[in-house]
Length: 272
Ligand code: ADP
Image 1 (cartoon, rainbow, N blue to C red):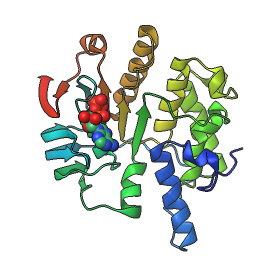
Image 2: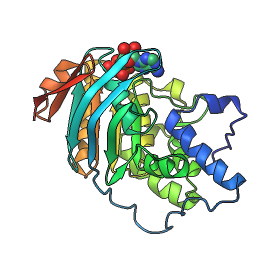
Image 3: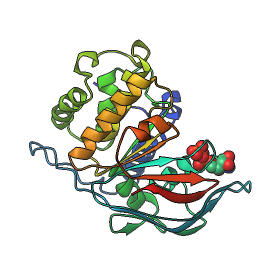
Image 4: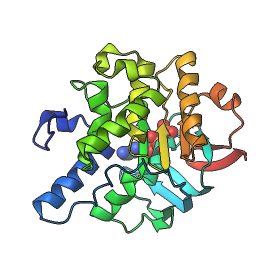
């Protein structure tokens, strides 16, 4: 159902960072003869998401060009929490999420996911942690010439799931985001809201305990934004820890979840 995508392929460049990283680590293990990540049990029910704990301890990040993105940030996110991170453009929101899924490293301080510090993790061990984090982006990052079903299935395929297990996970996930009727559509046949729901399905089809959403409603109108937030809340209600960045204050006002605000890299709690 899903054709192979390799690092020499043009389509590879268009894959989201987290998908590329998973694919890379799998290819690397195959080429070096290492045991691939343990295959998931076939025929067992999808594992219930085990909630994550996330901590940033005195974290600062300045990019190589001197841009200061985060300054001495301390943040604890409990198991099964739902947190909004607000702040204007350039305040450090994306950087905070990138540190949480190991795309960037802090200049000082420590990032801890569950009981693992990301600071010294590299290669396969970092890939293992990233497998347990779902990421949703503002611009969806879907593979254009693949159907909705293939876009979602691809993540599981890259992780070595069997065809049977992929099938078993795919349909409930598409149903959860209300897209079971669009499984065979291509991304350009979908509205922005639908594309974002595909990207949420892709992020959670592997039942990660932690979901990071970077401005998931940034390109959507208010009705679609509310729908996306409703789905994120539904995922949170089944135990997934959810962290959402947004500069949409209306969305934040309409909810009663905790809110932190970033301003020039400094973090403060607006609502606990
Ligand atoms: P936000 O997500 O709130 O818009 P970012 O985390 O993207 O903020 O950016 C915070 C600051 O870091 C900004 O000043 C931005 O220009 C800078 N920045 C972000 N990414 C990079 C990068 N890869 N290289 C250099 N500077 C960056």
